[in-house]
Image (tube, rainbow, N blue to C red; front, side, top):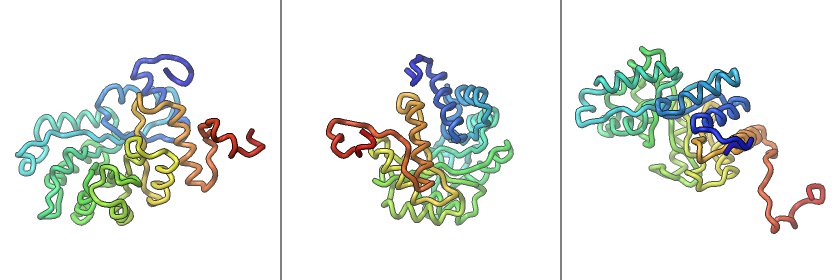
Amino acid sequence: MCSDGKIRPKSKLEAYLGQQCFKNGVDTVMGLINVAPLADAIKEAEDRTGVKGIIVSTPGFPVTPKSPVEGFTDKESIRILDDMQKLGSTFCLPHQGATDCMIDKCTREIRQFKPLCKMIRERGMIPGLSTHMPEAIIYADESKLDVETYISIYNSMGFLMQVEVDWISKVIQNAKKPVMTIKPMAAGQIRPFQALNFVWNTIRPQDMVTVGTMVGTMTPDEAKELIEMSISILEHRQSNVELQETRSKSSIKTKENK
């Protein structure tokens, strides 16, 4: 059920959520773009709002014992890359399931990613890395890998992060390319106010915050609240988001608000 009281199939719900984001200044979508119904939902949201979305696709690639030597030149990997191109991906960041398997701590490199990034470029997409391992960012920078951005987990409680929060903060601050941070609310374990204040105030101007918006976990109204909350943090002002009220809070409301 949407906030307007109408019931829609999942693809329509995704599109409705996308419309709210596009209309409120968020024009970038990150995710598994080739998984239905996301691609169709983005197209519908674009058509309804007139906003052209920036698509950050994070496709998975088959990884086998041969991958560190033979790379990602198999037919399935080629098909996946071609699909990303056909679906209009602006950026293509191989999912961490592929990235992190290729990290070699002995040679301090990400195996077989140089040719993979070349194949991404050849299809008119911008290459990057999606990772859960801070080493990926360090090694990519050291080896001058042809990528333009990184995806990294970052939240105040260290949820799913492999080293302490202050260490990940240092990695992000020192990264040579912009970092798209994910899981700011630690899969719902941190409330939005605390989560967003932490991430927005500890990343650089060129970095991003990504919030999960899958249908079933977020409504369009919640998306609008998160956008307003984020903008208020960046503008250093009080948010216009209406707070949840209970009887026990009546004593702390000002007379003007009663």
